[in-house]
Length: 65
Image (cartoon, rainbow, N blue to C red; front, side, top):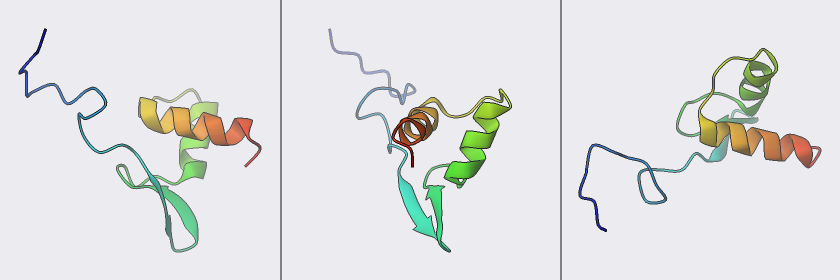
């Protein structure tokens, strides 16, 4: 069934995916402007973070980066 609910930005095509970009020598999430280290530190403190940014941060930790 097709939904035409334009207020729901979720899903694969629902908006820009978070991307890590280099800014001033640091990896920064393009959507939030937070650095990778800031997202990792927030996760360690148990603070809420963007779910997509969380997945990327955890994947990088798992890979040892």
